Length: 284
Image (tube, rainbow, N blue to C red; front, side, top):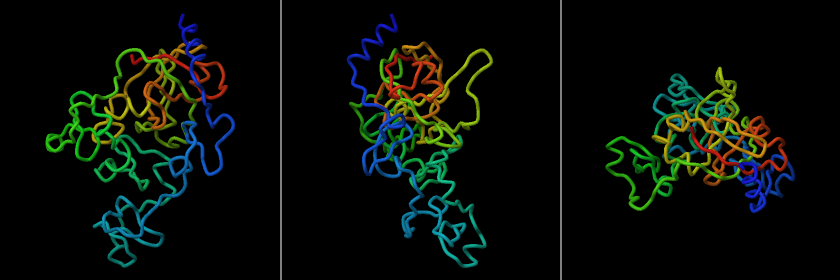
């Protein structure tokens, strides 16, 4: 019955294809880790953009231009005063947009890991003004969901907004994604890529949840604080049924859709094919 239902869903769904699998992208576009075409650093990668003016920034977050040192006060320079109190200068090669960040931190727009509002409130998870927040959380003035009373006192107005549900059965699409391109060292949830998710009595595959269902439950803009990072789900496809754990976040995936690594995709679909397949899934 499950296979028949999914087959019917497949016939009435439009599958655009996954650019990781075939065709690639047109001129001026690049293929993201989740198989979507676009332009800019998110899709095409590249070095961290470090602005030469630090009037509104802190080099302990942004870093310094080549040859400069970051003082303990967060200013760049080449004097002994600056370089005598070097504060963990981070090189471009450690861009967290490429490597990911460990648990308890998030990646700033400049590619550095940290836990401050400057790291967590400027780019990622800063859309709760549109997506609302999960139970017990409010949309703070920084644009991410939080529970601190002083933040919630000046929260954004969201009287009519409701967060995307994570309860019940979902029927959507799974896309094959390259997990090392999404974050070579750490997943969105701060889990080391080298760590197996499997348990003694079951195989657990790696998956990415869509932004709409992930973000409303991310506390203080730090993805590893999201309780979804501890959740598992059953995913049913034409080939069979698997158990996954959501450790990544797919910004391009629509509500109800998920990303599956190659191993997981093959287990549920039998082949990579177009890199997209229709599924049913629910949290457990």
